[in-house]
Length: 242
Image 1 (cartoon, helix red, strand yellow):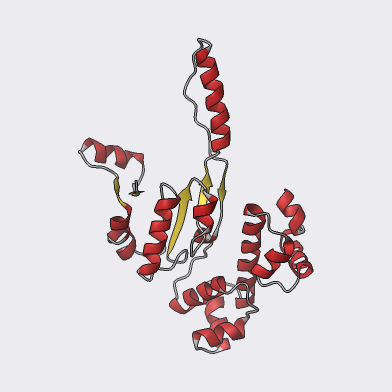
Image 2 (tube, one colour):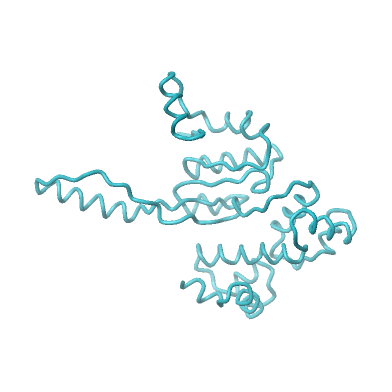
């Protein structure tokens, strides 16, 4: 069931239901209408599951809306296949379903023995951060293009000069725009995105350091390890273990 949920809180949801309306609308229709296409940006959207998140993501990209810079997307469920196999990998809430299964089995056993069990809420385990929420506030269109270019070319050896060439402007202009808009240099932003991507791969995959280095623009695993330790205080292997 492809739905998109929206509200300003449960009070508004209850008001809608009391008035005979619903807080859900077909996701594709919702994406292409006022809430995303015409809303002031940047905005963030929480979707019901990865299917809806993927629909939202692809519709945004078809409309020329940048994810996550203009629309940040967080889903629920953390299905690795659906989350990882998207043009922009989707951040998701891990619902802790394994614990839920054990708790449900314990409740069932108690009921079968004639006991009673009160309702209980099992909290989510974590938010798995991927590209769809990895964003900094950017308003200037040239800086937005630059941030997207960096994200899409992390595996390449890129720097401020290559970025300026790709955008068709001078190196000095790019440096000034970054300093004014986001408060740090192009080099710092490239490094920030690379480290963020390394963390995501360490957390959500079993890829060895050699492949992670290749995917994130580090020339060797030792280069990756040295930079990562400088930024986090830990080498990648220990960070993954922790």
